[in-house]
Length: 117
Image 1 (cartoon, rainbow, N blue to C red):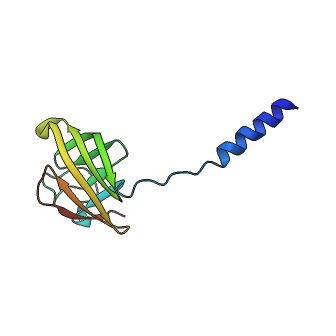
Image 2: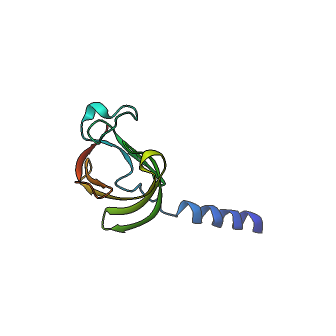
């Protein structure tokens, strides 16, 4: 009987734990909706940006998220990249509403992206 009670309490604690929503910048983004498919492209205008909780894929290649701090909904990231843009790259992701985000990659002029559908 005691085992059932402990099990019921444990299940209740797990079920009562709130599920965290994904960060607002996680997803696939592009300047032009036509570039939402695939990973191709060699510029911000011709490639989609794919953001996960741990990595970034864009025209510059694949990067792991190293250090990150958040300010409101914005994320300021030190990305660790391989390939052509190897090394640490500063990236800022500033969402605007549910379907737009301003991205600054390696201190370049910010680009306005839309969430891919």
